[in-house]
Length: 108
Image 1: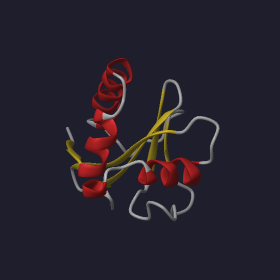
Image 2 (image 1 turned 90 degrees about the vertical axis):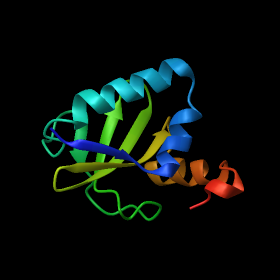
Image 3 (image 1 turned 45 degrees about the vertical axis):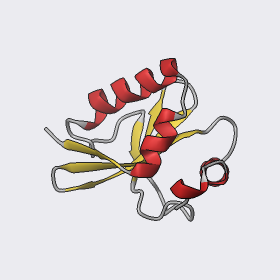
Image 4 (image 1 turned 180 degrees about the horizontal axis):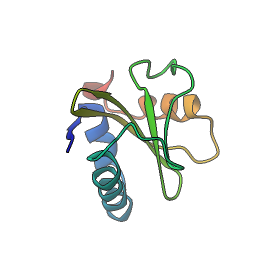
């Protein structure tokens, strides 16, 4: 089993979600990332190239609806880096949009 470590930015983004979506994200992360988080599936895949807005992210987990979780794996630890609502935007645009809406104390 892998340990899940939430980055402070991801915690803020998770708290900003409506309760229904927050529960869905948490359940999916726990179901999908606690066991072989580097096993590629239809909803979990490695990023093809580094993201400008999140260069440390190496994997993407798609969650029912339009949410995305970006993470990296080091040993037996999964670091949850970001939780975004992608919608119809590109990933880079959705990541950028999320950083503009944070309070100053949570800016990266």
